[in-house]
Length: 288
Image (cartoon, rainbow, N blue to C red; front, side, top):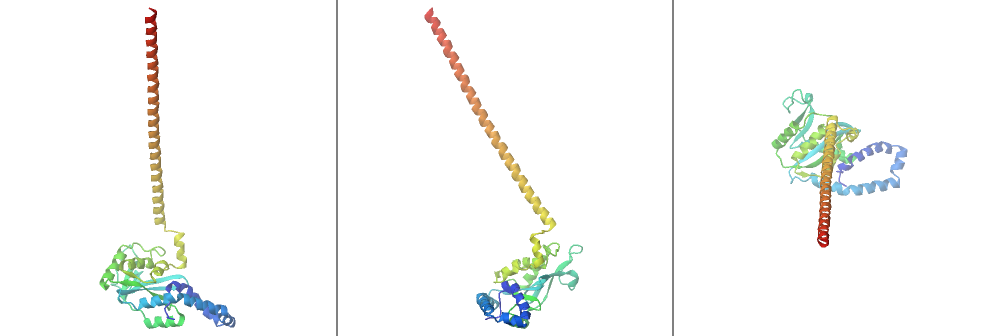
């Protein structure tokens, strides 16, 4: 079986490293060599085979443009760092004091982070060795996977990186960090997406960052609530206007009906009076 495994399974496979230590014990050897465990491993590897073959083909494909790689440094679920790699460079968002002079620009008094570009290539030998040993795209805590291809030149990618940084705004550890920066940059430069692109978009969060859905940033939360309240108030006003309009129309209709009834009654009364007068006149003429 090919060495490249689906990065969608990468986090789950990290547990296998812990199992390796357990397997070295006598009890672990009995468990790992049991028929049930052997069948489980065979079934899992067989299910992953199509993904493996697809990623092998993608990594060998250079016809769609320049390959764009994603590297994630994460240890025990704790936030570390993320970079994109293409055209022999790595692109990242880093602390300004950690960036050498001349790499990226800092807005004085506004940001403590800036984009960073420097020459960098993937250590294929080390990556392949890690894959062969642990069946993971993991070398020294770095997960490296292909997320797509770009047809932009190096200069165009550099400009895209600068443009994303200029519109990125103020850095926030949870809601606007290096991974969000890379997601925006990837949207700008990718023309074809690889199989691991969905994993890159959805799985760049670490465990504690799941609190994002429970604890939104205060300013954005307030703006969202304000928008919701404004929409509700507008809907209520529109409903009230519609109700008032409907009531006014009903009142007008009722008034028109009442006026028609009154006119009809008056016409009937006048007709009756005229009939009575005519009858009296006729009776007087007959009597005379």
